[in-house]
Length: 175
Image 1: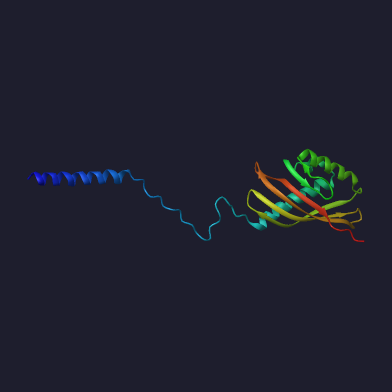
Image 2: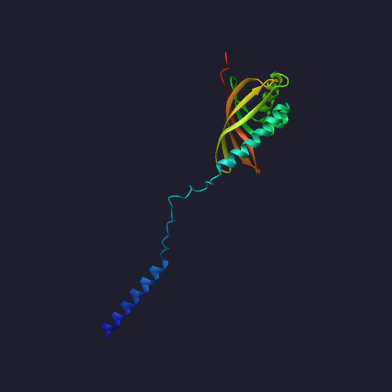
């Protein structure tokens, strides 16, 4: 009889011990489902056509300010910490340095000349867009006297795109 009581006690003890141990184990975490067609985390796919159109609108406004010889309006397209890498000159760091260079280059252009900026490609996401484009400078009669190409990186800050980096250079002039 004593042996039976020990057996019951041992059975209850093992069952209770198993219950306590089982309840204290953390639940196994289920791995998130990964789909082959899902974009990488934090990436927001942007519509390439809309992206290009949005950047072309900025470049058209840029050309308007440039053709009006408005260095302040052009500087407003840049972030305060922008960096510009122009043809045959040192790197320009900061909006103030870029604006000073813009003012100097505007003074060297022929009176009545115009410039246009054409976006060839734009890619990125809703926060950063890299643009590839070309520039065309025309004299007052409409004859092209200079052409070049550029790349710009735009970042959305406070709801609008600002240029944070750009690089440009001229094409070889016709002989």
